[in-house]
Image 1: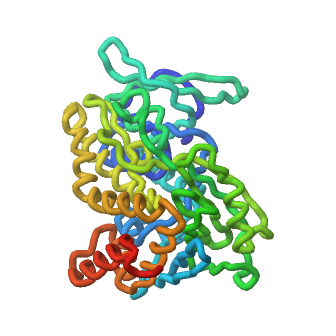
Image 2: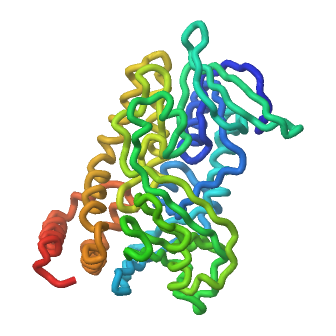
Image 3: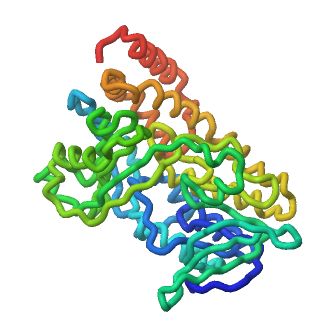
Length: 401
């Protein structure tokens, strides 16, 4: 049941935020026998391209009906309008989900595991006489008047996004998280022949006219399509940029269903917990991949690690093991992607060279293998060396784009 009232309560864990990270942590902890409350705002849909790799589907037992499209290629578009196709070989794919339905399915699964859902807005964490965390939240009453609730918890998991209120109030450094602000429009997918559109292809636009420091995207979701961009540049006009992207691709003539915007973190926080009884997961912990902006898989795997650390309730030092485990498994990938974004996204001249590199079949093969399996591929040392020297030649401008 999805509760909307207030009242005093006491549970093992309160999870603030019901996106992929929060719902995953709530399900895992409830399934382990803990009493769990999942507190989530009403009507929240995060702007997101909706891409998930096959590894997420298998690791988290996602049913096939939630995958609204299977992408078999990407098209990289340079500032010069040069187009580089990147097909996925060997039957691989990028799964596309609609966050409105995907997130709710995860929340329902958490509830089926025993988590109790409450719709409300987190306000703050206070302390009772024993020093326990008291989560205070605001919810709308049936009479549409403000109602307040309080829940005492042994552990609080903040999975409430890049500008996490839980984090900013309770975890050192969370208030300084760097982020890109993303904006997208969900539109009715067109007939492929009437626009620069293929229902099985992602379009990725590395153009300063679309974003000065990120990229634009056209991601098909079956009946609908996400068109968006992002930037860390304060005051940059994201809506006009998306309008330009829609005009360029011929998608300005299709129906707009909804518009959404939200911050996307640029790097993992240096610490995720308060050393006591509060820990962050997902976007709140900063686990969105640099350069690509991919976050769903990393949100869910970070939540699993946070839940595993949280299972040792009463052992405060155990909370720090979640971040250590995540960075041990994924830190190198984040580091490489961060360097890539720094070098290749800073100007149209660099973006042109980056798209040129994407023509290389070794680059394409290693990129897709790393994406689908969520790990660097050590089995092709010759290809890695070859790519390194090609990258170096482009960085030093020893070759033309």
